[in-house]
Length: 393
Image (cartoon, rainbow, N blue to C red; front, side, top):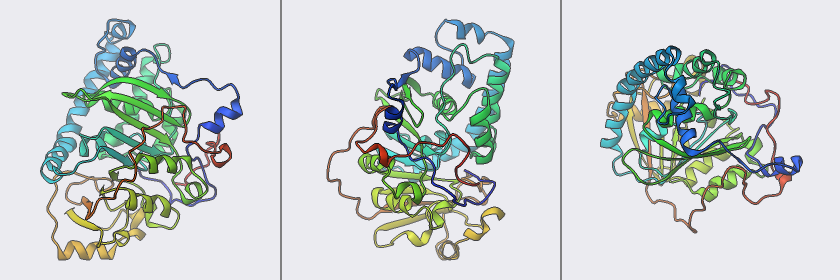
């Protein structure tokens, strides 16, 4: 995700925690199940511009000219996005990543961008996304109105993703905190149903949402977990329940794009090292882990596309060693944009595969339901601030 300023750290922000919140509240309720299953899926379809499957009040609202105009516009924009960006990506993945097997995929610094990680890893059963954007809630029948504001918020929030392939952080920060809908959850649900997935359950709290869904042509129930969490060393280095969770989840693969080059500096070394030790496959653009951090005794590197100087705002993160590697080993072309280099002529992609996958000492533990946390002292977790203290972008 693209910041408007370079990340300067003044204070640690939110590291996923729910247990402390429950104790402080003393009367915290169980995690919210947002409506019946069919209603959740229909609400997601409604705000995505897809006709609800049921015959309730949402179906009646879907008959208004206001909604049908919106649905027509969303159909047109999504089809263009799919043909220009997703279809070429699917074709490339089918040819170049056909042997990659990943049950659990971790996408750090993702924000609400589920569509790309699912496109690159369509067979995964667990997706873990993480960003500073608040979780939010899916709207109810009451809060979905007035339609002009709600549908306009969805359309506006998705604009840069559909146009350029990534979210702009400064826009997300404003839109996901002050619009008629709030948080990452509505956008995650829009991407799920627009991908043809069917949402079967949704639980959420302030710091975590868990969505279970079924993909087209499949009977397995898959899980999308989104965490509002701070991945800086200042947060992860002082007893992070979220980092414990990642270790327990044992991700097979990581996907990284438009990550503000955060892991190129010294302030994000813990998450960088976690990815390098936990994962057997890493798919990223040049904004992810620097080339210098890949131990070539452990990793096979496959280069695709073209490496060019980063955007002006990130030009200090130019990697001469990566440029030299591209020059020595001409990479295969890609016909889709990736991250900040959304133009296919300047996009780059690196697929790193471990020479020997990490041995797993114990079976994977399932992701906790929203409202549950890994066993940990509440004092070792931190609450999200009520103000805008976060990455200074």
